[in-house]
Image (cartoon, rainbow, N blue to C red; front, side):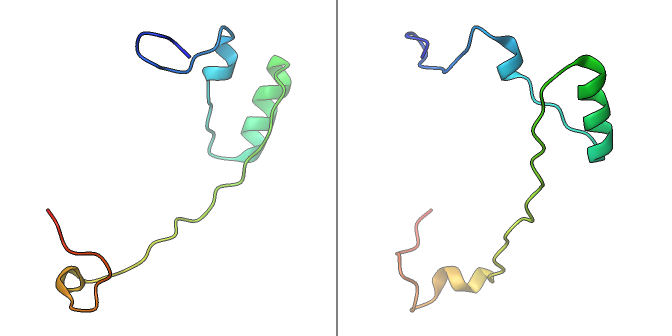
Length: 67
């Protein structure tokens, strides 16, 4: 941890780089061409909860509404 700002850093620049590709095959080909160890992480679908604006002011609301 960097003492002045408290940022977490590494002396190895490769740890700080993240690449993204449209297809998994492109990523694998790129890594194999450049001799880079890789780990594929499948994307997770976004969990969205649909609520209405009126729910902010409902009497059954658990927490009080604030700005």
